[in-house]
Image (cartoon, rainbow, N blue to C red; front, top):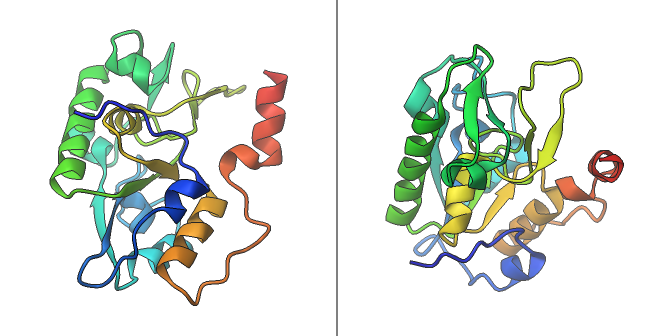
Amino acid sequence: MDMTVRFPMTEGDIATLPQFTADSPIRILFSACLLGSACGVDGTSYGEQPMLLRLARLPNVKPVTFCPEDVSFGTPRNIPDIHDGDGFDVIDGRARVLTDKGEDWTDGMIAAAHKMLHLAQGNCIDLAILMDMSAACGTQIISDGPRLVENRRYRKGPGVCSALLMRNGFRVIAQRDYRYLHCLMAKLDKTHVPDAAARNHDETEWYRGYFAAG
């Protein structure tokens, strides 16, 4: 098993992807909410993602969707967050997943992560585009403890499901990594003109300001 953590993804990774066709499409695993499934904690999809919908509809893209939290906990549901670490720490037994009601959802989240990994492996996905800041699907940032507090804290690191994908060699990016998404669109659709001003989440003023202060 390839246990190399492929994070963060780079433009070089995108550039070295092969040329995909309708007969041999790129296989992308999406957090289901990003393509419109009403599986968020509040029973919504958290809003439309026009660029991702366009990407998923390209003839040389095979989208695979999955919501690990919905599988383990249903929708709507209480809000889970990681306490005392990130997704890697949860997998390794050093951190727990607790809800805003105090429920311990660690085992359920780990089970969901393994189901997501099984889906990724079974579909031979080339990369995953996941919902950032989620205790399950976060890629760059997650809440540091409970999010429903006056002074919400953040930490760098992935959620549980993203961490397991990364640990098994899968490339993972966030829906807020706009520079990468534009590069990927240009790779797959020759008519796409990338936005030169697009930035990834970790390149934003907020991210750099917040973590510089921390």
